[in-house]
Each structure stands twice: as C-alpha cells, then as structure tokens.
Amino acid sequence: MNKLKQWLGIETVADERTQMRELRAFHQAGLFIVVLAMLDLIVRGFILDRPASHWGASLVYVIVYVLYALAKMALEGVYDTEVDDERSFKKKMKQHFWTHLTGGLFFAIVMLFLRGMPDTLNDWLKVLATFVVVIAFLQLYEWVFTKISLRRTQKELDQSDS
Amino acid sequence: MSPSMSPMKSKRMEQGWTQQQLADRVKVTRQTIALIEARKFNPSLKLCLEIAYALHTDLNTLFWEEADE
Image 1 (cartoon, chains in turn cyan, red):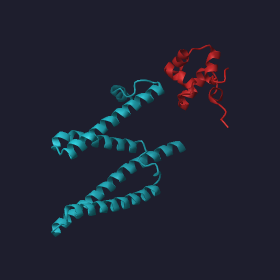
Image 2: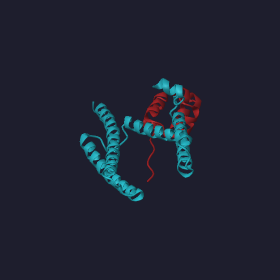
Image 3: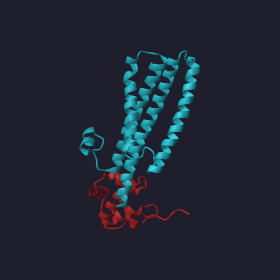
Image 4: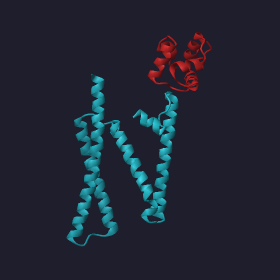
C-alpha cells in the first residue's frame, strides 16, 4: 500500500505536516474535479439537453468519486459513527427503511402527479416494481456500507481491548 | 527565556542545536520545527515523543503550558 501511495505521489515524505498539506491539496483537487463534473452534468445534461455522449464521462467521474468516497469511509469505519454494535446497526437499518419508504412514497406520488396516473394494471405494476427496486437498492447499499464500517469499528475496538 | 519563547525552543537552544539539526534528528523539515515552536502547528503525539527523546526530556517540559484563566 505504501509503495502504491509513493507511486501515486500521495505519500512521498515522512514529515507529517508536509504530508497533511499534500493530502489536503489532493483532496481539494479531487473535490474541484468532481464539482466541475457536476457542473458539466447540470449544464450540458439538464439545461442544454445535449446527448449523453457529451456528458457521460462526467457522470462516470461523479459516480466513481461518490462510490470511492463511500467505500473508503466504510473501510475506515467512519461511514456511520453512531453504529458500533449489532443493536445500533439494527436500529439504524430500521430508521433507514422508514426514511427510504417515506422518501420513496413522496417521490412516487410527485412523479405520478407530474407524469399522470398509469392507465392499465400493467403500468401500475411497473410503477410498483420500480418503487420496490429503488427502495431495495437504497436499503441494500446502506446495509452493505454500514456493515463494512461496523466490522472495521468492531475490529478496532477488539484490538484496543486486547 | 522570553515570555513568548516556547519551552521547546528554549530546550533546543540549551542543547545548542539549530532548528535544522533537530529536524534532521526527528526526520521532519525545518519549517515543521519552526511552526511547532511558533505554536502554529499541532504535532501528533508520536512526533512530540520523538522530539522529547531527541532533546532528552519529557513531554511536560516541552509542551505543557498553563491554561488561560
């Protein structure tokens, strides 16, 4: 890992102050790139309504950035610092479920009003299926990242106990 | 020791070392030592210990300052 960091130029010096400032510079550069990519998405994707081939790369940059940041937070055990045992994990998952459910319902109702009510049973089933898939995806991603983060936290707590 | 001089600086001067010499011993840059002495950078506990070992003293002597009432 250290060799990789050196190869990437992220950690080349032993001095902690220099290292801290270097990391801050890399962090700000990453944020700057992702803000530019988001602006590109908004301007070319939504406002100018250009084809996906024009802003697709920016979408990929944003997705990679978000996924990398979430995965890194989970692996470092800081994805959800309120969760530090199985009990708090279950409680948090319940909270997420209700948040996703109410948020999803609100979004579905708004979309139904904007796009109009489905005409056939088949269309209703499609709406329902989309709703279930979105809720399941949100719940699954929260479950995975929180679980990874919890494992890391527990491992660190176990090591500090021993 | 002047009131603004940090205990670390006075300890380093007692040893007759320059900032660069201390920096070389604890493997950091001279700027880092200068900023710690100027109280503009908070070093990690690990670096504090390395500085204390290098100056043959303890953390209290180097870094303890009474809280402002």
